[in-house]
Structures are given as C-alpha cells and as structure tokens.
Image (cartoon, rainbow, N blue to C red; front, side):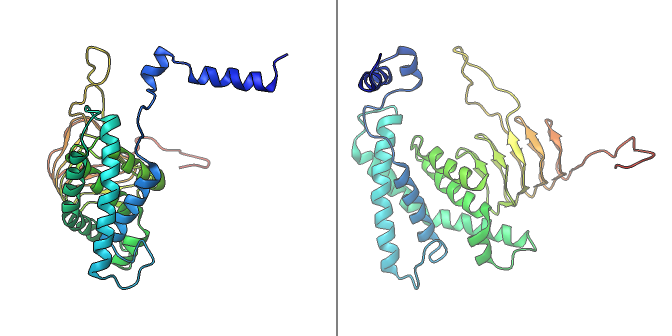
Length: 295
C-alpha cells in the first residue's frame, strides 16, 4: 500500500516531468513573468493620474502628487515591459534599456490618452439622458472603465510591447463584460451604452462618434489558415465609419464596411456591406397568432 509520502512524491514527479507535447503547449517559464498584481497597480495609477479623485481617495491634487504618480508608473511599467519582452518577445535577451525607452514613450502619450478619453466621456454623457453629470459617467459607467484600459493597452501595443496589452484589456473584460481587443482602432467620441456582452475584434476599425449598445459583436466571419493550420492574422473584422449607431445584440461579422451615418437596429445579423446613411432593421413578422394567448 502506498504511503502518503509515496503518493505525494509520485504526483510531484509526474507534474515536473518533461513532456514534449505538454511542453510545446505550456512552456515552462525560465524567467519571471509579468506580475498580475503589479499590472493592476499600474492601471490604478493610470486612472488616478488621469482622473484624480475619481479612482482614489485623494483630495486636492498638486503638481507634486501627479509627478510622484507618473514616476511610480514609469518604474512599474519599465519592470513589467522588461519581463514581458524577455518571456513573450522575440528577443529573450532584450536589454533593459529598450524597456525603459518604451515605458518612457508610453508616459509621453498619457496627455493624448486623457484627451481621447475625455471625448469618450463626453459622448457617453451626451448620449444618455440617464447620466446626470460627467462625474457620474466617470465614476459609474463600465464603458469608461473599459475604454481607459483599452486606450492604455492600444498605445502599448503600438509601441510593440508583447502580451501586456492583452492582459490589460482582459482585466477590463473580466470586470465589465466588455471585450475590446487592444489591436482594434477606435476613433474619438466613442460610447457604449450599458456594455455587457460587447465584443470588438482585433482588426476592427471604428470611426468617430460611434455608439454601441449592449450585446453588440464586431467579429470575424471566418479565418484564413496558414500552412500549419493556424489562423493567419489578416483583416477579418468590420470597419465602422463615422456617426454610426448599432443597437443591442446585433452581430456584424467579417471584413465589411458599415457606411457613415448609418443605424443598425437591434438583433441584426449583418455580413454584407452597408452603404452610408442606411437604416437596417428587422422585417415585420409575416405571420401572427390569431387566437389564444401569445404575441
């Protein structure tokens, strides 16, 4: 009969034994990975820096407060970009100087990120009569939380930082139910009402003054496979031009274009281009109940 020590030893050996198949799918880290708690701290610092008082308990914020936060943010990002680049990047021996350069380049983009987020906040406030103030929108609306994380992740992706952008947007996804890939390109004055279940794919392009409602999917219709059977990263998501509204639970699939100033009604399945200034709605029912209860 196996003893407790035998069982524990046997299990430990099995878990640590190299397996060619598993090793290929789940590589064993030879160096430290980005730290989730630190990434959360990074995003908390970003929010507190861009919107003082809304995401922390600070009172009057001085230039010194902002400088301390930005300095701390740079230090944390430097470390996490370095770890991410060494493990997930193409150069495992990437020097720390490159991580520092990327972290500093991101810090320089913070004013532009704040400007873009300000347009998003304005769009949410002006598009929802239930919102009583811009402050309420910043504090309470999940779309703002999702867009803060997306705008940060998108800038890091443009800088060439591996994986870290995906971690950041997935943190927002898990807390808001809004899934925006950091590779998507989203214009100014973007708003999402309610938000739960919204999906925006990697190669999606969204213009200015676009509004989505809950449950909208901007997804891929199909994939092009490479020689090894792995999907190729080609344009496969919709292009949404300026001044478009897409109502709840509509699904827009494939590399199609929704023309500017169009409205897509609720529960629409769209896989073809839509000309500018179009109105796409469900057809009226051609049959109805003639007796009894029901619709």
